[in-house]
Length: 74
Image 1: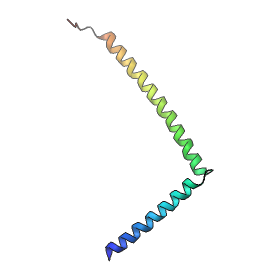
Image 2 (image 1 turned 90 degrees about the vertical axis):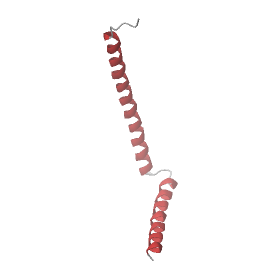
Image 3 (image 1 turned 135 degrees about the vertical axis):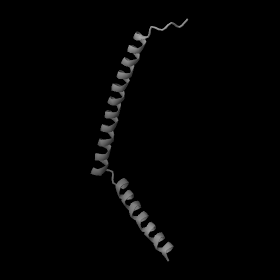
Image 4 (image 1 turned 30 degrees about the vertical axis):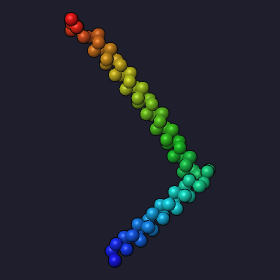
């Protein structure tokens, strides 16, 4: 009996999730989609800025290490 109840509960929850996904993707002018798209774009820009800043810092550190390196390679 417990297995049947669990199956029905899972089917019901899956149906609700499917219905919400259908409603979300079916509407082209959805405010939710627009908001998510904007947040995604903002996250991409922030990630690119952070990546560029980290790259600059690492390149500066590498340059400092190379200039300070006085070991002989012979």
